[in-house]
Length: 236
Length: 236
DNA sequence: CGATTTGTTGACTAATATCAAACTGTGTGG
DNA sequence: CCACACAGTTTGATATTAGTCAACAAATCG
Image (cartoon, rainbow over all chains, first blue to last red; front, side, top):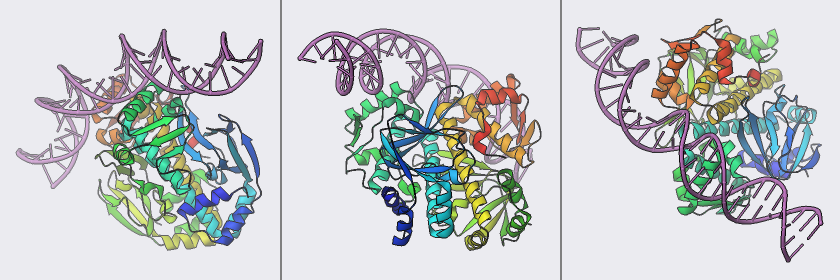
């Protein structure tokens, strides 16, 4: 059952009948175990299949001409990070494993066939892509209006909310195997500054990030500092 | 023909048969002339119709709890800025006129009917939404990796490219009725700093922004300073 | 025409970047 | 088990970018 996690994920935002779920489970796919830091889709690729993160984390990123990397999303198990490859000729970002991850690949023709047969699935997938876009919009707000502290708090609040929705976060902590340098590339600040911000949070007893685990000691503070409001996640 | 500009816009990115175009032209809609700075869709709204910018400009924005505004997109004539309202329960941003603008509204049920009847139109619209998301991703790169100069250059390069594609930009200039304060909210910098960056560009003979008109004197420099690469616009 | 918004300037401050060095932890091979 | 290498983190010093505030000038609008 390669796509069980994906169905759990879809059901966070969409009602899905057992029939539809079963149809999704029957999608032919090939899976691959990838080590951390593996780029498995590249900017400029012409996609013929889309992928599902089965376990671990991936992220999407872009390199600028000046050699800077911007991380655009974190994609935990269940995510479909290149769904729009179905309707676009080219992929406009790199897709990279953050941790060792298992990734399933589904041929576009199978997806298209299923969408044609079951319009509710087409709708669910379009909806999923729309929420993906909504998360990008909030990412813009994060970078455009918040200082370094608030950016980190907001990102962690979002991750917690999304991971909790699929059972991947406990009350006060979750697995998130990221380096400070990667956080820096996600938040648009330097890794030195990420380090200092984390230290402030530790000293204030708000949170800790250590060895692939995020601990949120004071979630109320976290939400307040990050100015976090979960409307944009469109969870039921 | 309320949606002629929209069709021109769709044809930038998608092949559309005459039949499909005609079906789109027959969509029932109501239009409205709105003054500048009018918020006509609000964050939290439950959408029942979607809109097409017929003339002028709109923008999408979000307010943070701290009272800061982040502009998320500029939407010229032809744009469908809330297409994803078709698949989401709530709108997660404000939609505001930048200039006086004519806006057409199409009931979701008419859109859904048409999508059901003509799957190529459904595809075209999904594709449109996917490109919208791609532009958000690049907006993240702009804010996360570029300094103030490059942000402005990159934004103007994007606008030029998109406007030229639908015939709304001449070789070296286009209409864009924006204040420096609005630019500041789009670029994540202060309006004072926007002013200084513009002055630098003027002094260097690269560009000018004046009285609702953007003049690009040295496009090569503009693209270079902005680090602009148009892959993400997915234009044919 | 006055009223209001927008643009411009200068002085000062705050946030964050950069650079370089040192420190910590973890895994590897001898 | 130790020594080493490596990646990641931490620290301090300094530089740069951009923000804030306040005043004024120039456009624009009714």
